[in-house]
Image (cartoon, rainbow, N blue to C red; front, side, top):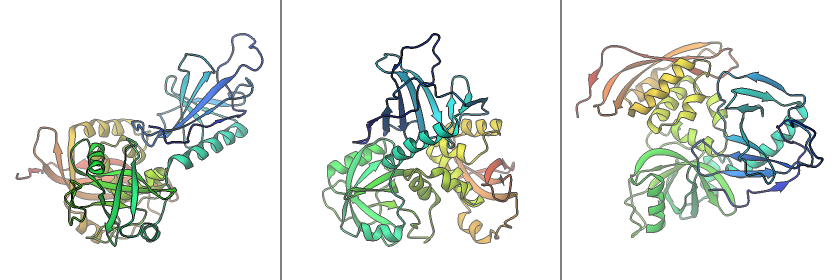
Amino acid sequence: MKRKGFIIFCLLSLTSMSVPVSAAPAKVLETITLTIQSTPASDFQSEVTIYPASREKILTGSIVKSADAMPVSDTYATLKQAGSADKGTSYVVDKDYSLYDPVSQKIVTLNEKKREKLRRYVEALRSRHYGELLPWKEARQVIPRKDKVEVIDLETGLRFRVQRRAGQDHADVQPLTKGDTKIMKEIYKGSWSWKRRAVLVRAGSRYYAASMNGMPHGGDGIPGNDFDGHSCIHFAGSTTHGSHSEDTGHQLMTYRAAGLLRDYINKASPAQLVDAFVLAMNQEDPQVLDLITYPRHAEFVQDLHAQMQDVDAVTKLSKTKHRQEMPDLDPGLLMVQLREELAVTRTGSKARKGMYSFTISRERADMPWRITDISTGDKQKEKKS
């Protein structure tokens, strides 16, 4: 689903990547279509199609190199000749606005002028696709109790209406009608779930980045809506009612809804990276998994992806104690090991619990942390059902 008003036709001197075999006629138009989607599987997309005015080659002055791995990105560029039935050539636009070709596994670094033009178009499109990052202390004023807003799921594009009923630390909301409840349940594929999802909250004419879960719980206040209880919507910096601390999973999804997922992970502490790993495994989120690891550790990352397909659930068993006993990190540390007791449920098996050791490293003190190894002891026992 493409957000309304996102198809824009404009002129740009960025032009075709194809090199003509013979001299091409003047003014042969080619198109560049930029697409933003929060994950590769998202149906909710925003696009802009650009019609260059001439056939000046975009590769002129660029540098082409082999790439170690496909970049983690939410931006794609498709180049094709205007009016052609050919699907064209698709590239992944990386964080530095270079173009990665998945077929040749090479990355094209444009010259500075063309990369800056591409950056401006991408950022303009991103500002329309994602929501504003609104701190909870402001969100609770913008969306007061009893206020009604629209929620847009960033993966499916499905929309439904809710009312904020309560909540001091985050918003407790309920679908307005049976129809809204039906749409919300469709987003969760027919089964209520605690899984966090990146959403946009439309209040008036503005869109805000947020995260929701899909599990009815607690008090009920709207009769006849087929929703027994309320669900939660978190904003930047909001906390849980029980712990009065931020929920890393909800913050990850909120920053994804703002188009700032990479920024959040780059500033995450080692403990938050462990939380992000648990979320990635529970929600089968390969994008988060790729962002919290180093792409050059290909064998380790591939193993985690394979395990993700076999794991039904990961539950932390030592969260509170671990957080209380963890000392402040020396700002000059380049490696730290954290131990977590986890219960891991694999497909067709009962939950097994054990102590897992996470090795978390960074290249320099001013660089972000990444998970570089996960190991477990031999002593595990089945969790009694």
